[in-house]
Length: 188
Image 1 (cartoon, one colour):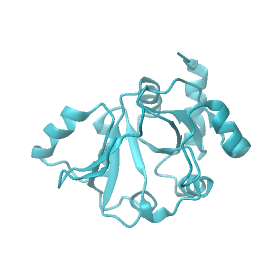
Image 2 (cartoon, one colour):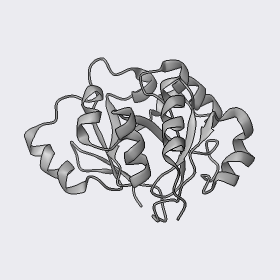
Image 3 (cartoon, helix red, strand yellow):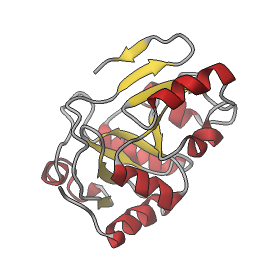
């Protein structure tokens, strides 16, 4: 198992705070991430992926509290469902906060969010004390990167920092479900 150093984790956090785009391991694939509040960083990430902003993005966090600025207050009936699936590989669509920027929600009134179980990403979010954008490290329509070498071959120096680490062992990307309807948007 690859374990990044304390220095590498803090360097990744530094780049996110500075408006950079980083790559990092997630549950199944390497992801690209940045500060969700930094519109320029998000636009750069979307350009790297050749992804349309209208689709929206996912935010991940180490605890639900870090997602609260981005989503409407969670209804009491929904809390149990979230608590039963988090931390874990389920991404939920929740009603976006009124001031949540459209560079995150795209054309939707919901925002995709997850409390990750990946220990490395949890530590990164703890250092930042906040959520980060999380999208697969690939050009739209291509297979996601599964190694640091894969990241370097695809993106070269266009990524500010690559946080080394092991993938979480999940074979496929996380499922996405709509919390209001229970519908699956993407299954394992």
